[in-house]
Image (cartoon, rainbow over all chains, first blue to last red; front, side, top):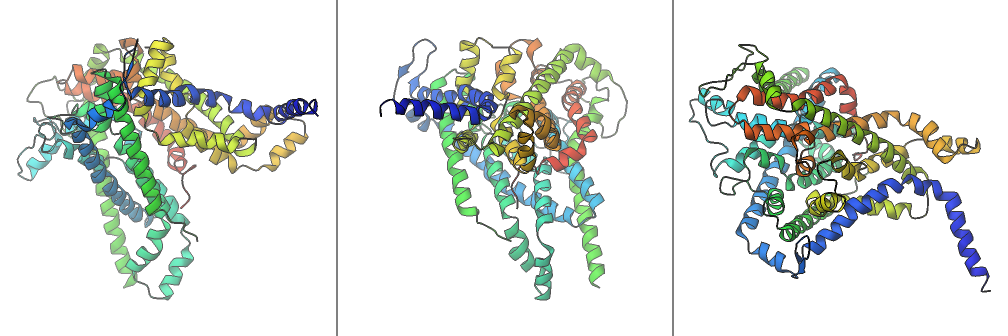
Length: 303
Length: 277
């Protein structure tokens, strides 16, 4: 009896290797990179968030970093800014994307391609380039395009990015007017997948355009909307480049987002422990909001 | 009556779309026009919406004041390497997860996937310490490339894509005594070409446009990518409108040209691996 067991183990390991060795080899490189560059950093950051970090000797301080950040007015300001930015951009962007997609869907194929390409175009330009251009558009001197546009209508120039009243709104405005191309393409693909027979059946019942929209179009496009909602929230919770390039979080912390605060805490003040604690609060929020969205907005649509 | 109201609706729809298209395009148009006007950096200068006083002087100033050629080369090299590593390894792993049902494949895949929701800010500091202090790789190409050499997102996309390929061909190749890697290389890759092309394009564009990690990990002027260099130039030269617009254009033009030449892949590629709805 005792001699059989090790043999069996060895032979089953050998069999596993013979049969599946290649498969494990195929995923080896990404798994190794994952362990070193994702899993280890996550665990390390979690430990760091409970430490007064120092390269040589870190001291364990329990929840002190978390207590500190919850008492920090700048942290709450950055949370507020991030939430305002997200709440103002994501739903409005989805509505803009949906309306544009709906309008494009009415066009002939040739024009669909034209509008898709045009509206997608700015998405291939880098965040740095877009920020630089918008920095010039918001320029309060006579370079700025937006103030020249206001001047046309006889309105007074606005110091868009330079005062705390309008700075965050300026970043939101820039986001609204950015590219919605990717979302439009996804919506159009889904709209093409809605069976025509549903609309024909609705026509027989003399359903109004609004009824068709609320009963057919919107429910069947829900998975796409959910996808845009979740990815949109995750992205805007981490907004950084435009803040770094255009306002540096100012004036008076009016545009300091949580991602920018983490960058400052870590790489300008070198408070690695505190920054790690901030990043875990951000991670917790992102996961929480994503789960809530999946729970309340997803529904299995069969057609 | 019905067709007439339909025509009016279509006209209004077209008008709305044209107006919104103009709004979307104006920043890029203004950037390009501004980059070929000689502004001469005076306070009273107002850049025109039309290409007046045409001149390449802003570009000359931008390239003269910066190491932009080196930055472009860095970006080209880094983006190319990232494209090759991501396409090869992500398709290899995606194929393994989709078609080779091995013990633990689902568990490993879900562990990988579940970490995608963790924001980059969490791993940033340990990653920085690891690369700079432990591996001593700060300010190098390796440091910029390694953390995103194979991304989980790309593996996910390739798994989705590989799942749609016919399994029967794999069985046929196995009967013909093809090695497992031979099957991947000679049977799967040729079949997956459209998906690989899309992955390559999106990885290249994303790597070219990446700002934060290269910005954090580079110190010397020569190691900067074009995006990082461009940002540093803007902070140093905030008054030379023409040169700034020329720089912004240099950062974006290669991708705009890529978009115009490979438009079809861009517009169809987004739906690969996305939700069905």
